[in-house]
Image (cartoon, rainbow, N blue to C red; front, top):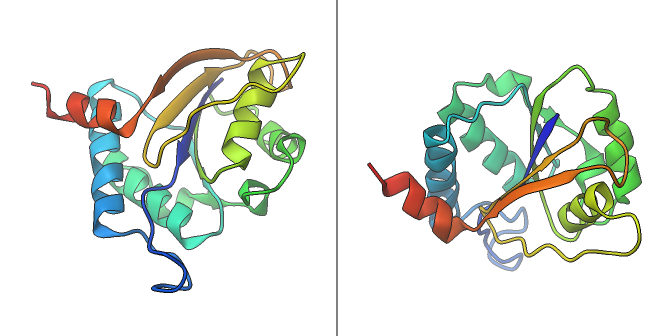
Length: 164
């Protein structure tokens, strides 16, 4: 199973927008990231999102550009920012029939999920940036058996999206 983790795009501050919608820059970040993923010939069997608006908007952009049904996006509270990684992994285990899962979420939970998947001795810190993507492959969806395949920053994804 391939698991793709993306932190939502840039969002408005809470005092400007209490729901913290994506800014225009945040939407653009996600568009560039998706264009790069498409150039890499990546497709998803399942798109999952946190219920927070900025993550849902991120998942919706990914779905629209990938030709994935908006109705097929699963929204789960197990991707809230402070939910323990073990809860998220339990949720993902219910989708063991999927090969490529995209997750739109938040920090610190994305870092905890990634660390739990690849490390069995201590915490590993992953540097997530808004609109960046991490790919971790697992044979079984359980802690400590994942392989970090790559981590691409939004800048790298933008460069890839503009290459011919």
